[in-house]
Length: 101
Image (cartoon, rainbow, N blue to C red):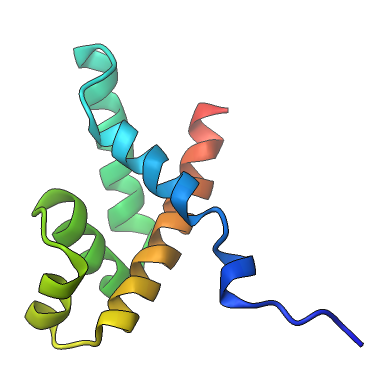
């Protein structure tokens, strides 16, 4: 029988991708590197994510809202926000790995 892929299997890199995105948004690198990284990140967010993913990512990382606040503001469930954020993180992570590997 084929192995069933679970949510945890598909998004096991979620924590790693979240740390990666948070680090890129931080000011740890030089000012010009930081600006370049943020520009690339914004291009990825605007060009590669769905509208729902883009809204959740912006509210979470740029507006500083938590998942519960995002769910209340957007009118979707906590679980849907969490899953959307996990998928967006993973997509951003894989795209940005291309730029920084």
